[in-house]
Structure formats: C-alpha cells, structure tokens
Image 1 (cartoon, helix red, strand yellow):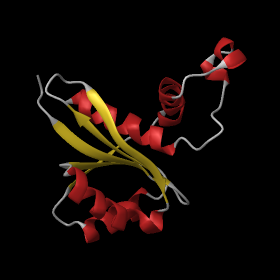
Image 2 (cartoon, rainbow, N blue to C red):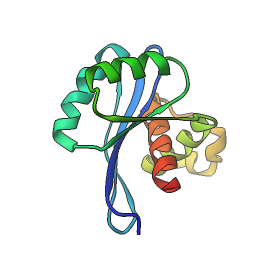
Image 3 (cartoon, rainbow, N blue to C red):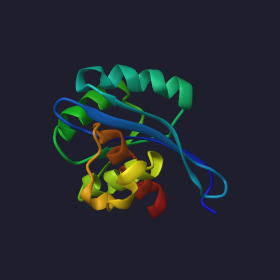
Image 4 (cartoon, helix red, strand yellow):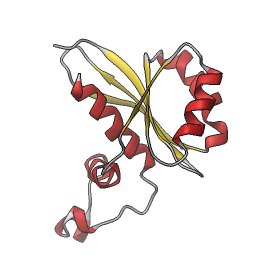
Length: 139
C-alpha cells in the first residue's frame, strides 16, 4: 500500500481552470473530495483558501495552455508548496469518460456510445481529475 495522500490538480486554461482535490485512502482507493471550474484570476486566492480546508501536500498542473502563468502565480502565492507539472496528452478524451462515470447517461443517451457524446457542460474539472489520477496511480 502506498499510504494516504491528498493532492490538488489543475487543468489550466486561458479563461477557465478545472480544479479538483482528491484523496487516496489507506486502501489505495481514490476519492474525489472537491471540484470546480475557476477563472485564472481567482485561482491563487481560491487555492490558498482550499489549503486551509483540505491540507493537500502537492499541486499537480497540466502542461497545457497558460500553465506557466498559473505556476508563477501559485509559486508567488504559496512558495513552500510542491508543484508537479505533468503532460496533458489525451486528458480531454479521458475527462469525457470520467464525466460520464460521475454523471450517468439517461434515457436514449444510454444506447449511444459515450465516445460519440459530448457533455453539455465544461469538463475541465474532470480533466484535472485525470491529471490527479495519473500522479496517484504512478506512485
């Protein structure tokens, strides 16, 4: 067993960032504790607030759009926190799958393959979940 761990993950973007807090328990099961889509301008303040509530030990940031600016603002706001930048390759496709797991399709939509359906809401927070899972599963 790898032990308990709580991390915050960010899928960065120009106009919105997906943010999640996940916890891996003592049985290596990953639990989604909190999720949101936040504007980049409000991100650092919100993460400081979340740190006091959830005490995560690591921030994971995808290496896509706006990642450098996001990382700079986080390092300025929270100089002592560890930040890990990881590859975002194929997170959008995997985020759709996670979205449908947490929001099961109903009615006739159940009969159409999930890969052919696009959620009607932004899924940046589920992309952040995929990033967090990649890190926790790699440990």
